[in-house]
Image (cartoon, rainbow, N blue to C red; front, side):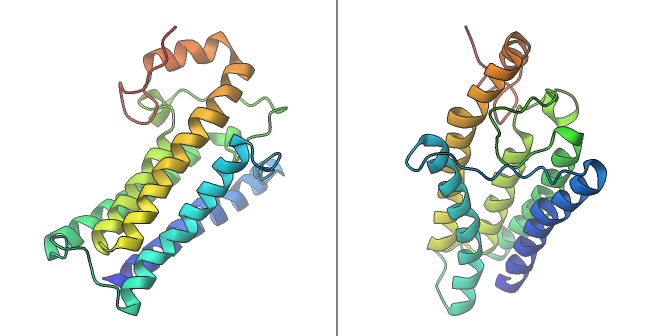
Amino acid sequence: MAWLALLLYLLGLLLAFGWRTFAQWRRTGDTGLRLDAGPVGRLRWWAKLLFVAALVLGLAGPTAALAGLPPLPGLDHRPLHVAGFVVTAVGIGATLAAQLAMGTSWRIGVDPSEHTELVTGGAFAYARNPIFTAMALTMLGLTLMVPNAAALAALGVLIVALQVQVRAVEEPYLIATHGDAYHRYAGRVGRFLPGLGRLTG
């Protein structure tokens, strides 16, 4: 199961970051990569650092399992592993689908000076950040497949990273860029899940 988890994770990275970047470049001439994290120590910098750390830690769970790290007590059950495989596969597919739904507005990172179209249709009609929701689902699935301390740490770091990225970086940018249109959208659509985290006031 650890080998399968590792292969699925690498496939997810390849599709979400490699293939999607290439597809964006082929379509627009722009990779969509906005990797500047801003001044060291600022929230935007920490968000980027946490996100990269989570991606690296994602490899640690399967790798540690292959190296002999035992699973956490009570979680080493075949049905949980199988459920984790299904959740991981669904998460990878949902991540790619949500990325494609953004069309030419898709970006990795934020350029504060850039103005892209506000996407509110498809999966974005149910959650404002369906890509991140799907990524967290993928990591949850991997944690069920290889339920060790390294995988659990990766899941925790990813959840923190996504919260910081969305709340401290992306939402302020979207409010500044789209103003009332984003406020109306965020007032009716949840942050990561339907109905949860809607902006008020």
